[in-house]
Length: 251
Length: 283
Image (cartoon, rainbow over all chains, first blue to last red; front, side, top):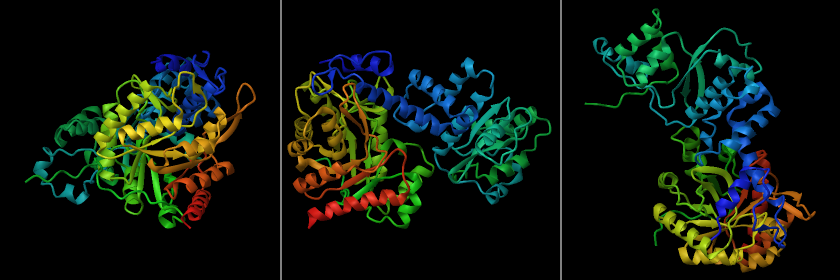
């Protein structure tokens, strides 16, 4: 048996190499640029997947630059599985090391946010906790109650106004980004994930809930991060976005 | 043998489902009698894709078409991916499951393209072992699709129709005949597409694919057709469909349009054209 992969793969991944031996045009002549069809299909399909997955990034650096960067990334980072919906996990780290884009330092965080949105889109569904259900918990038990964030909740911290930058990149009506860092939660009400800027302390609070801590401990961690942390206001925000799970019935 | 009870695909036109057509399909499917999805797009944990698929599957027979298993790969089939396919086919219980005579994965790197195989006895044994395993895991018979070819392997000792017929004979799998792929490969490799169809194991064919292709040229100026799924089905491919249906009788016929996806009426018109071709052989 031929080393199909051994012959084919290096040429597939490196356009500078000639087509492998043993492949022909059907009339016995070397395959030549016929082999390029496969090279091209692989490159173009991966670039297209990144274009679909990172629209704000593409808008920020321009389609031409994006295609160039995506081609370089794809050549060195083939997908790790056939689930293309998750392709590009390594893209933020790749961008962070790219000298040519070092003058736009917030790009990796925009990429992380776009990954989080895509991830949230495909995350498991849940039954949302209702305000009535939360109100029905006796006050003395609240501190010990564990409220699980929805499986589609994603958290992101950035030194940049990352959510505002993304909105400015893809929406005509978005204001010019201003200010410093943002803590962002991607929340999915129904099927459409949305980045929501968290108040100070909110990130620590939600991280604690995701880790399975009870409300008392999560509030303590939120207040440690921001002395004026208001858990009631944040819970209201989370309920409005269907971002908490209805607790499983336990009797 | 191992077939989970399910409703088979009807001998009507189907289309490759695109989410942008969700509302239009539910509103008025026109000539479209069934839908095909790419398995890998419905392997997330939840969200809109799964919800839409659940809703569509209540109205239409659904065909699950895998594009990522790498049945021709040199390594073992990815057990994680097998498990995902089993899970999807388990809850959806589709009318059909199909995959490709191709490879796409090596050492867990996925190339997102259907790469070609030499038609040797070694490839035959490997592909049959993988299909046996897949059919065992899914508990159902699968269909295997003929590829579009841009080159040939000097070491091939089988022609493609005979190779596919032998796979079907050994594994009990059915075949998916992509008529556009036949036309593309025949043009690219210089053989007669009608003869290919005549040699094909048509009794094993459970589904026919049609799609658009692009035209290019090789180093010698010879025509090089690219299977792009980005345009209307070409006239000679419609003619080859007529030829095929005249030999095979009515079959489920799918329109594939995956890039530069058109508005619904354009896609539905292609399905209507397939309906007319089916009506000619049913009469």
